[in-house]
Structures are given as structure tokens and as C-alpha cells.
Length: 70
Image 1 (cartoon, rainbow, N blue to C red):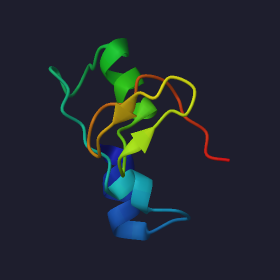
Image 2 (tube, helix red, strand yellow):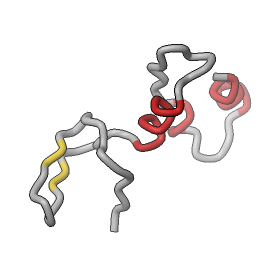
Image 3 (spheres, one colour):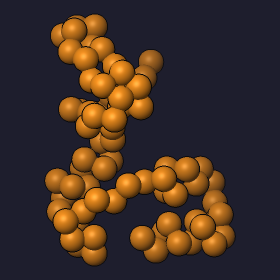
Image 4 (cartoon, helix red, strand yellow):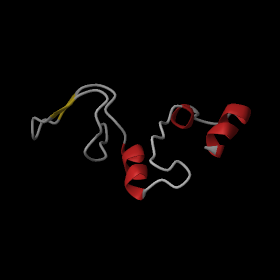
């Protein structure tokens, strides 16, 4: 959380991912690796459909794996 405090105080490049990150950890001072992985992986910003599997992920749902746009 200190990084977020520094960004609020001093600014920095690309502040949005830091300032808008959500940290719902069971123990915020010592998060589990699985919780960190979910945070890094992210959530869908809009409804997504995988053309190969036809699986749809709704906006706000946890992504099942890292997804690269392209």
C-alpha cells in the first residue's frame, strides 16, 4: 500500500493501475500468493467471448488466465 501512497503524493507514470488496484486480501500485510496472482491476472473490463471455446466471461468476472489483446 505504500506504493499507492507514494503515487498519490508524488504522482508517476501510468498511475491508474496502481491507484485503482483492488486489494481484497485475507491478510493485507501478508497476502497469499494465490491472491496476488488473481490481482495480477485481473478481471474482464467488458464481456468477452473466446472464439475457440465460445466461453463468455462477463464484465467484472475473474479472468481464467492472462489474456492478451491483439
